Length: 314
Ligand SMILES: [Zn+2]
Image (cartoon, rainbow, N blue to C red; front, side, top):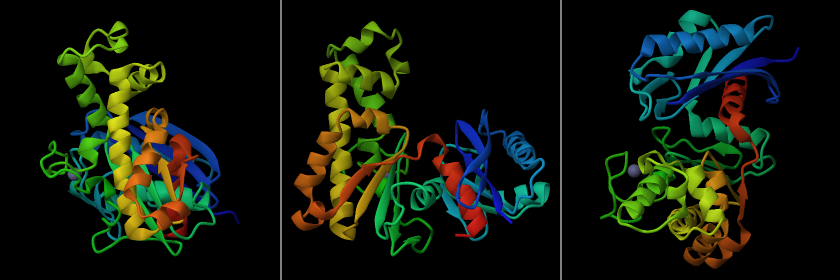
C-alpha cells in the first residue's frame, strides 16, 4: 500500500502543510498565516488543525515539520528559532504528537528543502551537492555520498554565517560581517534604504512613498530596467554570495550547487555577477567541475521535503 505522510513548512510568516506519498507527490495542501509568533498555543492549534484537515479520509504514517533554527532532530526539540519567538527549547515534536497521535519528526527547514532537492529536484542522481537558500537569511545543507551531513549539532552547512568581513555589519547570529549580513534580503533592503537616504537617485521612489517599506522584488524590477542604485545593491549581494560559493567549492569540491529560496528571482537579475565572483575566488579545477543551478522546487519544497523525511525517517 502507498505510504502517505504530511509535511509542514513552519515559518515566521506562513505555515504550509501538504499531504504527499513517499515519492513526494502532493495530494492536498493548506496554507495559513503564522501571525504573532509569541502566541505559541494558537500557532500549535493552527498546525494541529492543518494536520487534521490534511489527514481526513487518508491513513497517514508520519508528520514531518521543517522549521527555521537550531533543532535537535533526534528528540524533536527546537532550541531556538530566530523568527518564531515562542520556540525556545520547545518540544515541538512531542507537543504535536500528543494532539494528533501520528509520529512527528522535526528538522531544520533548509535540510527539509534539501531532501526535496535530493528526491525530486536538481539533486536527484547527484551524490555530492550543496543546497543554498537565499531569503531573509541565508542557509545551506551539504549532501555527501548521498547523505545529509549533520555535524555534531545538526548545524553543518550554516554557510550564511561564514565571516567575510570581520568589521562588517552586525548579523542576526550576533557576529559581524557574516555573508548573511552582507547579502541576504534584509541586507539588500537596508543597503538600498541607506543609499536613498544619502540622496542617491533611483527610479524606485516613483513607485513607493515610504522607502522603509521597500521590498526586494521592487528593487529587482528596477534593476532589470537599468536603475543604477538597484543594480549596485543587487550586484553587491551577488558578489558576496559568489564569495561564499567559492569557499564552499574550495572546501567540498561538490558536483553541484543548487540555489533556491525567496530571493532567487531577485538575484537572477544579477546571476552572472554571482557566477563571476564564485569563479574569481575559487580554485580553477573545482570551479570548472561544479554545476551551479537554480532550484526548480518552488514554494512547496520545504513542506514536501519534510513529508518525505518523515515517511523515510531520514
Ligand atoms: Zn551570522
